[in-house]
Length: 304
Image 1 (cartoon, rainbow, N blue to C red):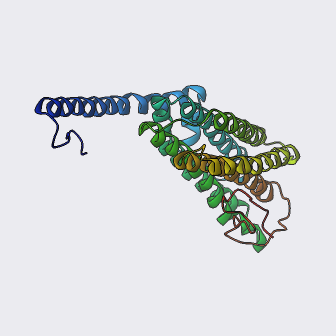
Image 2 (tube, rainbow, N blue to C red):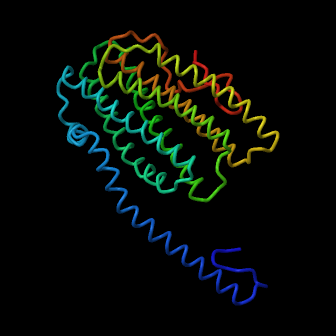
């Protein structure tokens, strides 16, 4: 049945009623969407600037100001920590909006995706300038150029994918996640939040990088994903989880794994490029290959 169209054999009164109700819903949705576009866009920017009073100064007009290596390193670290902080908080609100079926909260997070992409572009450009300022004749130091773009972009892409999938699921009025799925995804979200928080804090302080605790959280997340894969497989066989919920569940877990891995790689790149640690990895633009990965794609083995 099309929008606002009743079955041909329905009484005229019923056809008129269905058409009127559909028109009201469409009008309300369009007006509400327009109103929220006007209000939320301003709120998103205002909220970010309010929590970070110098955020506008940090992210605007800085591209042309980098002229020496020493003064620009701390700012580059600070930029990345701010981006990770905003992504971490946005992911927490987006997942909560999915669990509670809150379309308005998810729409607010969806509007931030464009802002995060513009921030990522600025960070990439600044990182390139810093690398160029400190570049020497040693060809090995150019490893971070290609990898920086890839890692930062993948972090932003992972956030956008989780937010957009959650928003589309709730907006289209699909069935909510099972209670056990919600609890499992909360556990995944908590581990990812801890990883992002640790990396964000390290970059913000520009302190010596200690990856031990971050790597341990990443291992726990991988172990959890393997267990959830087995649990979700049983749900599929028992038909306890519908196909749409299964796709959403695997997408969130997979993106969490990817975000964790890319954040760790960013930490390594910052240490290699800015901390002076020698690079012992072979250059490969596609370091995200996962040999031995299962059909779900959750076994992210370290490439050799």
